[in-house]
Image 1: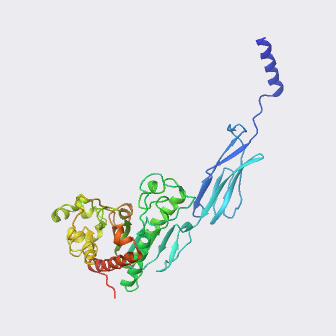
Image 2: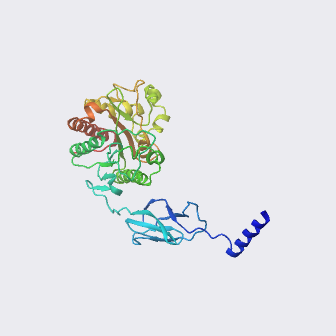
Length: 389
């Protein structure tokens, strides 16, 4: 009986010429969305063809196309090439079935000159840059409120929003214009909520795999870099201020020069040792002026002293030279990247603001903004040699 069945099966296969492959039932294109930045940028999409049972059909022929060739083109291998800003659909067809993916091309507008006082935006206005002409750059990375659906929520790292820091930054800008004779600071603001992007982290933690968040991260730091380059060209040196909000128990402003609380707890003699200015975000200033490093950081003409003169409790300063073991922000990614730690002529300081009396009401924000503007003017006049009418 077994021999007969085998013979029948072999005969059937011989007549049939072998088992026919299953026809394509589904086509899956990956990734399902893609952003290409700059004309000429390329990316190869992948297509997986399956039968009705979900089994992959190996070697299935796929025909590629795009809905709008003016936005991007695509070749026979699935490689797309960016052409112009816009959105289009990528289609992969296998027989009578097909799958699609969304493709966006974003080509930043070419700006020959950034006009002081004029606002410029990145993609979808997630990042805002108000151009300036002063030797002063101010950024706010954590005060945004936008939560676009295209960017997934971050799943690790700090997610809390620095409430009212964006509004405080705008008030600071207004006060700087008023107290610097109409001069304009450079201002860069992330309008995304921190649950979507944290620009004060390196890109992996900041964006957590979202290509749209990564684009916003690059634009944020690119605008700061553009501002720093402008300051260096126009003024020779300058200051970068990164504004944040903190919720530490003691209500005081914290100035981060990349010096830890432990560093600041040292005596002035110890703090003046060469390694401390060399590892700080005001390295360029420390090398250039004829003052001890301790004097720059917490002396009578330090930024902390000038803020205290405006009745703003600040650490480090002559009255509060160190955090005394309490929580303290010494400066983060942006201060390291855009200050003078790794060279350059733009110094940096991270300014952490407590809420009550500083950020909590419009009146308090404007009062503090005036105090900070006056302190920054005195600091730049004293240590950088600038003067304003």
